[in-house]
Image (cartoon, rainbow, N blue to C red; front, side):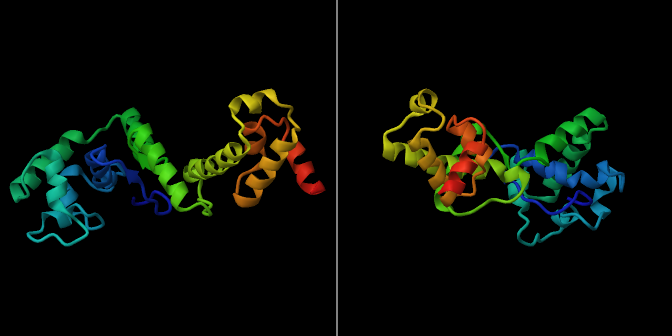
Length: 209
């Protein structure tokens, strides 16, 4: 988005908030005070005026966009979309902030279940990747969690064992060591997840080994 920091991409759950996300992108120059909503067709640094062309070039897909609004792929459909943008334009600062939070933070737009399923799939397919950026931190945690659960399963341990056994149990130390060795997890996360007390306990054990 123009003047909004470095490029970033978002994963959008199918049929979830896609039209709202496209609207937000198209209205970005309006909300930045660069042009008026009725003049968006003349704003060159946007995909919006390109959608008005008789033949729209890929990767733009006018048919998909207008189908989200329930209108035909035609100039008449674009006029309906233009009216939709005019009605969608929001001058209330609180609503603008709400849109920003919805579309410009995190890495996924959609339901919690779909987000978790995608995170699990990414972790299984890319076990060695350390996802960069604060927004993707939870993907790393999904990766760490998956590896740790495998180790617990091999040892026949459960969450009850984590809570009941001493903080310095040898099996906890071994799980911590393997998880640190094979993932990018941090000691504070491990200490909390395995109920091992202060992270320094893990650090000291790693040094001894």
